Image 1 (cartoon, one colour):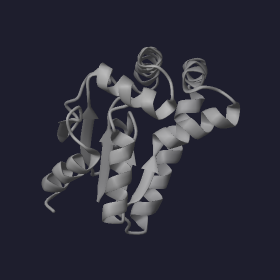
Image 2 (spheres, rainbow, N blue to C red):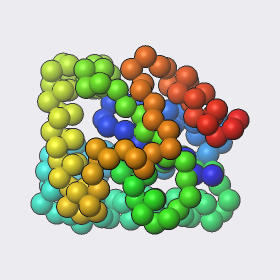
Image 3 (spheres, rainbow, N blue to C red):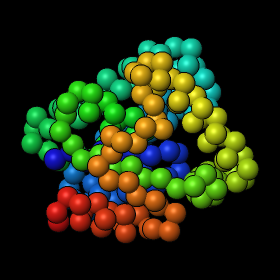
Length: 179
């Protein structure tokens, strides 16, 4: 089984994916972790790497190709996979790869507070960074793949994380999966 967890920055998608993988023995494939590693390797902030990716679509294409390749390799070995990332649900659907697609979201203020706490910055700075990332991602994914991040019809389950713990969200997903 492939579970894909999408959502905007700070929604809780990576935390939920990590908890799901740990609880279910699934392999975690994280596009966000890969993107953060790319930024660190280049000595760039996420925002700066996003701007670079706007100018050079090969950055996103290489990342997305690597994520899809990793998913396919694990599935070929019979492993359950949980994937987190902004566009992986769209890409797997485009590739006709069967999966359960979950969108986790929360209001900007909630997401900014989470990111500020995690990164040791102010809520206002986190809001600014989130807004910049979302703008950049919207531009890139539309131009590269024709993906409109505002179109959530692709998702099988949508969860508002503002008042839920990651474990509660894992339980909601498990109920949808059937166990």
